[in-house]
Length: 534
Ligand code: GLN
Image (tube, rainbow, N blue to C red; front, top):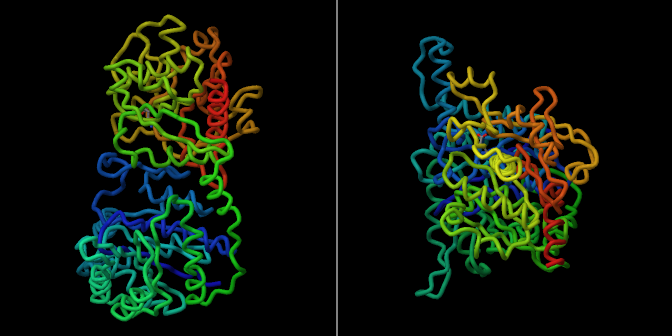
């Protein structure tokens, strides 16, 4: 089958759930047996989101091949089996960067380099390249229609229909239909205007996904259809749902996938949505109630910065038939007030990844509390590093143990390796993407994974300092996971504790609602036991 292209744009306002809609459509098409690939085009000038502030951009999602990407890619991976890579996300900055490089090399033979065709051709070739081998490629265009920045992307996707024809291309536009309380009704005008903007630049949407906080009455659908030049059955409501994993089913009920395969002339079986139904059923009626997990971090006001983590914890709950209540605790508050009131009402404590010294002493205090009060503890990346430091200081008596990320300290438990120090001068020293890890039998990690060879994703610069290995293991710490090639410590645990584990990698990037990650499943399982024993 020739690859079919589905383009998803957004109108009216941003943060309207385009990414979730795209991911859910991907899930529905996979449930029909199709091979799906997904891609996000971001209209900003930054070359990638790796260096963008989490305050502005939310989480940086990392792929197996080490791309630092937009958090929407996290949704795509959680909802589908699409294998995402560096090619799955690109920005205006990247497009201009490659075109300017080509121009400098003389590839354009002295011609005038212009937005059309040079920039648009570059965009199209990146879309086509990523779609190779897939039955259907779903491409989400970031930003909102009408933004100056998105224009080259929209022009490029307009050309796709010109190049490949109807039946091979599909335009889905996501809009908002607000309910206006003073008028006592829903308003279609913003949708009309947004579609008008699209049509002005030559794109007639085939399907409208209308986000709304209540059912969209049939006469409203009729009105939108007439004004926006789409068929009435293609005006699809997406009513706010109590859970994001209920979206695929909700969209299927509105026949989105049926319309899509029909318009693209694809014959498929009916979708099997039983696995999604089971997920939603567990979330609605968990057999084992709720566990409370504290996440002691720095960007605590910004749940967007911990998107994958929060989802992975929810998945851990699904695997244990329980709901997970997340209590975000600002680690600086722990520094100020101590544990009291912050951590004494939870069943598990998680210290997530992070950068910089701020709040780390509070994290260490939280870890000491989890260790001594025997509360299940999960440390991820910086969280694992702080767990190693806590153990060194309070169990091994290395009082000045610390990370050389923060200071040039006497006992750098966490440090840069010699070979990294020289690379440092050139910048770009992060260990990014998937690395293999060997797991020792008879450990918590092995019990969770039930495998001795695993692969997990990294995003960090500093490493566990091998000089201190024996000091820590003599006092009972177990180094249960190692990256053999470079002899790097990847997982640490404490056997004299119900569940205490830290990992240098980010397991949250590989967890899915249909395949909860083994470590999150085990951690939530331990928290459940702790709750029952309280
Ligand atoms: N700041 C630490 C490092 O660079 C941890 C990074 C992280 O938690 N992602 O090694």
